[in-house]
Length: 436
Image: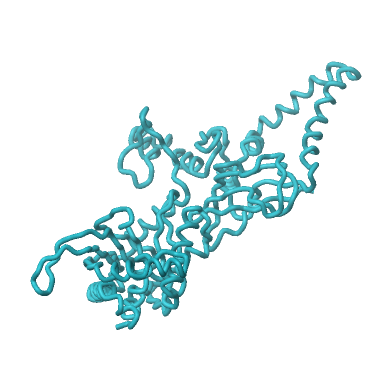
């Protein structure tokens, strides 16, 4: 008996995913819990394991298909010889026609094309099965009575995607309005949302690639932050001399003892926790007409990956040591680059730190990570002249800091004071230990 491979629960508010890669082909032997297929949601990439051992006998959702939670991806037949059964079943009909002409008159084959013509009269169901439409696409096609053959697919091997069907539906009213204003209607139907320029064909030296779910979700969240929050950014600069001296003095012993390098992220995380305790509005969020103050400090650390920006969350950062912070941040960085982060790793943060300095950024204005009300941007450390208290001018390692905040609940005084507190803790690291 075949066992169905289904899309697992993908996390809160996630209902659909895209099939990005099958690790096995039809006919391959499968072990229990062996990764079979990779799904991409708008937050993470998920590997679906085999529910049972056997042979992969069917793939329902091909690469590029959009699938809903609970949808069937394929099927596994228990037992090593399972793959031989479909082959035998497919081979069985072949000898039948070969023997039929020997014992039956020729007219027996003449009616055969007639039954095949019947499904042609109702092409939609037949085409759906042949094309392997995803559940989301099949639902749209059935709801709107669309013939899938009338829609050009942009997925792998010409398969239809949900976006293809939605674009086709949007373009349907265009003929009705064509008599009044044919040119504007056609361009409006084809014009992508949010693009003020009409579409144009790709040039010989261009390549068009459909956005991944993760990239689309990143775009949506960043635009949501700009549209919904009263976002403002304040800046300051930090003299990194003392914190660099502490790091250089202890980094070798620290790495030998804890197995991880002593970086600057642990210092900044600790400094932010000190400042967040003093200015709780920056550790809060808006929920309707209420402000929710968080009495815990789950700090998100932005990590750049080939797939896009992700923000894993270090839980209860206030209770962790420097070594525990560095270990957690290093582990998240490795798993983010390998696509191994889970949904639970990226939810529930109360504040975010983004270090653009690792890429050489000198100054930037970070965008809030909704529904948080604050994000700290770190930047490149470089030698710059600084006027010292005694009036002398010295070359010092300086870093610009930027705090973007939601002005709806954070006042300018609080934002500036928060950044000054972080500056004090980094320029005199002993303040972090003493909370002074």
